[in-house]
Image 1 (tube, rainbow, N blue to C red):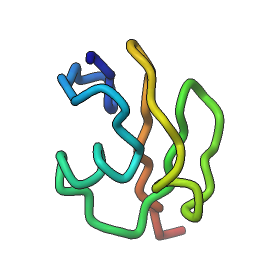
Image 2: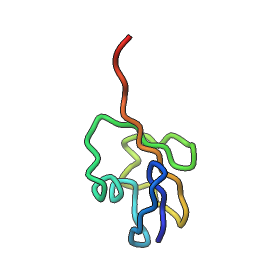
Image 3: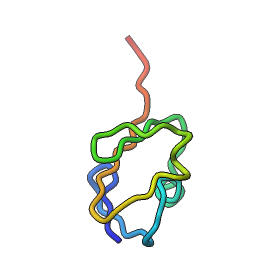
Length: 65
């Protein structure tokens, strides 16, 4: 199944969760995740089912002034 992560296409198995994609791309915390422009809390990463053509944004915090 095709999903887009930070504007890059990835093939993932059907029935993949957000946590599966985070492992696939070796995402290192801290980060926030949005699927189709909707924030998904960290507690839901293991149970949020992804669908064909979902757009996932993984956003790292920025510090500074």
